[in-house]
Every structure is written in C-alpha cells, then in structure tokens.
Length: 294
Image 1 (tube, rainbow, N blue to C red):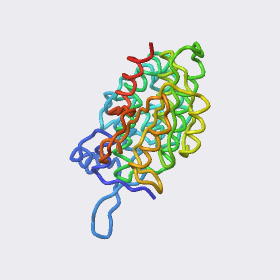
Image 2: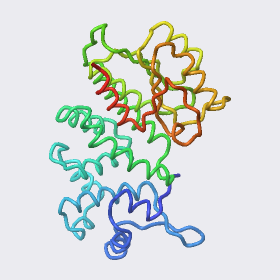
Image 3: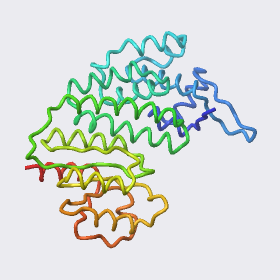
Image 4: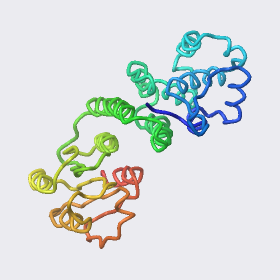
C-alpha cells in the first residue's frame, strides 16, 4: 500500500500543511491514520479526495461548502470542467488526478487537446516537462508506484509517436542521424521526442530504440552511414568501464560525429575523444539540431 506524509500531500496539492490540518480539524475533510509511533499518514484514497477538494477550492468554492458535499458530488463537479478552460496549474492538478486514478481516457484527451491547440513542442515545454518534475517529487518520496510511471510514459510516448507519423519523410540529401539507447538506459521518452525534433527540422532519422548493445550499434552505423550518432548516458554501462565504452563508441564512428548527453557525461571523469560532442541536456541537443540541419 502506498502511504503519504503530510509533506507529500502539501507538495502534490499545493496547499500548505497547516491549512490541511485546519481543514481536517474544522471540517473533517479527511482523517489521517497514525503509525504506532503516532506519526500521521495518508492513504491513496485520502490523496485522491484531497486533490479533488483542492481543485474545487482553487476554482472558488468555499471549503465549508465542499465539506458538505458527498465525495461523488465533488468528483462530478471536478469532472464538469472542460480542460479547454483550465489554466496551467489546473491542468497539472487535473492530470495528477487522472494518473492516480489510472484514467487513460481523460489523460489522453487532455494531451490531445493541448497538442491540437499549441503543438507537441509547446505541450512538452509547457505541460509535460513541468508534470514530470512534479511527478519526480512524488516518485522520489515513494508516493507513486512504478505502475503510475509506466502509465504516464506509455501514454506520452504514444502521443509523440503519433506526431512523428504525421510528419513527412525528408529528402535523401539531408543530414542523417542515428539515435539509440544503450542497455539499462531508461530515457525512451526523451529519445522519442528527439526523434520528433529531428524529423520536424528536416533531418533523416534512423531510430534503433533502446537496449542496443555496442556490436549492434556498430553494425547499424556501418550500414546506414549517418552524419551524426546520438545517445543518452544517464546510467552506468553494464559490465564495462565508462571510459572503455566511450572509446569504443568513438572508434566505431568512421566519418560520423558522436553526440552524447546525460548525467554520466558530466559526473564521470573521462578523456573525451576528438570526435565526441558533449551536449549538456536535451534542450542543448535540440539547439544543436537546429544549428546543424542545413
């Protein structure tokens, strides 16, 4: 069972802990449980209720009136709001509810509406990245399960892939990028989004996907002869020193330029080969594409 501290609830609801305690005492909105050492905690059902209550409170409902409503009435009023009329914070709060409830229909529809209105790039920058930051806090606190993470990633990845399919293939003379993730790397969303950016800005893309071992990457590079090879290195390489992996990658490039980003590129001391270009993050990787796609 997932349990939450009052600090977890504060971070996810945006309501201060002392306000939550007042609501509990004065309006009996939720009754937290207590451990054997008298530390209060909240269940997933408590969190859902609090998030629904906070949503209506932020929309102008008096807390005393919300406290009188049955839970089903609260949910109905929350559901009555069209996502088209919600501001940024409301959308994030609404998505948090959808995730907790594993409500794929409404989560998917909200993303579709946002992409339709602003495009995928704006949706990623204005909605999805802030959402992932907020969820990151929840996951670090142990407040969300891996099933929530899988649920979110699968839906967002499907939206990115749909946008990729809508883009036309580019001319054969344009720059070619081969992109992949090595074994143990869990950055499929970032790789898919980078694929979208490459295709949108007129590049040819060979996406090898994730869990690509070194020998397979070398075979693919020899066959597709890309101008650039891109990967993300957040995790340590299994069964191989990082320096050795980088050296073998660089040695296999032939005429291609190797583009690397990720935590390991800044946290590990490495003698970088001359044909390696380090990119600080995904944003800098996108900037590189925009400058070099002509």
